[in-house]
Image (cartoon, rainbow over all chains, first blue to last red; front, side):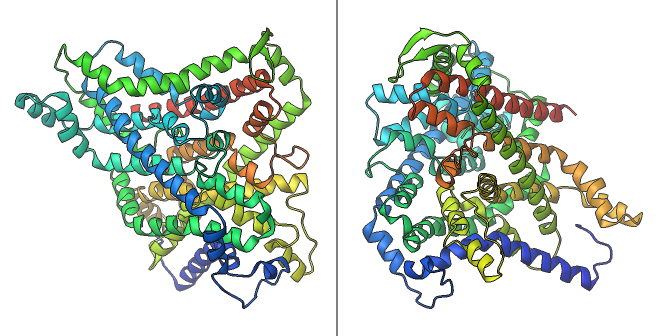
Length: 276
Length: 313
C-alpha cells in the first residue's frame, strides 16, 4: 500500500472514498451526540432529529442545574496531582534501580515487575477496608494516595534512564555531585521526553478512573467527572437527553482540542519510534 | 492503570544491555536507595502486596456481611464457583466479549492504519480523525452510544423506522446487549490501536516494498507477505494490551447494561463487584478476584516473555 508503482487515478479516488467513509463511521457517534446536544429534549424524545430549534439551552442547563463544574474541577485536581506524584515517585525509584547499588536490588525490581501483573480491580476488597479504616472515604485522599506511585511508570522510566550516556554520569562523579544533584540536574532533564510521556499517561489514567472512585466517593464534593456523568444520567434527568449530551460534549470537546494540538507532538513521537 | 511495556522500550533494553552503567561502590548508596525507593515501596506494599495476600486469605474463608472471616473453607469457595452454572456462564460471556473485542479492534485498527499509511495529499487529516477516540473517556463513550442504541428515541431506531426495517432491541435483547457493549468498547479502543499500528507500519523499510514491486507482487500480496510479518511484534503487543484491558472491563458495562439483561453482560469484574459490595459475599468475591488475577497475570507474563525474546534476536 505504501508504494504502489502505478498510482493510477481510479485507485486514488477509491482510496479517498474509503478513507472518507471510514472517517464518517468513526465520527458518527460524535456528530450525533454533539448535534443532539443543541436540540430541545422534546424534539429528541419525539425523534425529530432534524429540528431547527438549535440553541445553547442544554449547555446553560448543564452548567447551572448540575454540579458538572464541581465534578470537572475534582477530576482536574486529582488527575494533576496524581500525575505530579507519579512523576516524582516513579522517577525516584527508577533512579535507584539504575544508578544506585544496594542489597536486594534485583529482588526488589522483580517485585515491581510482579506488581505490573496484578490487576488493581482484583484487590478492591481489602483496599476498600484499608481506606475505610483509615477514615479516607469520600475524600480527595482516597482518590489520590493509592495512586501516588506506579510500577509501570517506574519500569518505563528505568528503561529510559538506562540510556543516559555513561559520560554524563562520569562527569558528574568527577565534579563530586551527590545523587540528588545528579537526579535533578542531569538525569531528569536528559529524560524529558519520557517524563512527558509518563505524565500524559498517568493524567489520562487518573482521568478515566471509574470503579475505585465509584466505590469510595458518595458526595458531589469529591465525585469525579466519569462517575458524575453516571450520576446525572441515573438521576431525575434520565430522559433529559439534550442536557446529558451537552454534559458529555462539555467533557469531550476540550480533550479533542488538546488531541488536535498535540497531534504535532504525537507525530514526532511516532517518527522517533520509527528510527529505532 | 498498570499497562505493560510499549514496543519502543524494547529497543532501549537492548541498547542498555550493551553498556551497563558502572557503579561507583559507595557506602552512602544504600541510604539514598532507601530515600529514593522507600515511598514507592511503602505505597505498593500497602495497596498492592498486602491486598493480594489478604484477598488470597479471605478467599479461603466464609465471611459475614461485614466482610469478617468466620469459618475456614479451604478451596471451598473455588469449588462452589467452578461448579456454579452462573459463574461458568459469566466466564463464558467474558471470553466471548474479550475475543470479539480483541479481534475486531485489531483488525479494524489494522485496516485503518494500512489505509492511512498511504502517501496521499491530506492524509494527516485522516490520521488525526482516526485517532480521535483516544480523547474519549468511558462515560462519554457510553453516553454517545446509549443514545444511539436507545430503543425508543435512539438513532438506530429512527433510522430503522425511516427505512421501514425491524427495530433491533439493542439493550433489552441479551444477545444484542452484548454486542452493544462490544461495539462501544471497540470504538473506544480504536484510536489508540490505530496510532500504535500506524507507527509500526510507517517504520517498515520502503526498500522492501520497492523490491516486491519490481518483482511484480500485487498490493494485497505485499500486505500479507511484507507488512503483516514485519509488524507482527506490534500486532502481538496491541492484541495482548486489548485482551488484558477487556478482561478488566467495568465502566462501560456499569454505564450501558449494568450486567443485564438476564446477566448476559455480567462479566468477571462486574460480577466480583456485585458479589462483594451488593451481596456482601466477600469470601466468594475474593476467590473470583484470585481467578481474575491468575488470568491477567498469565497474559501479562506472556507479553513480557515475548518482548524479552524479541530483544535477543
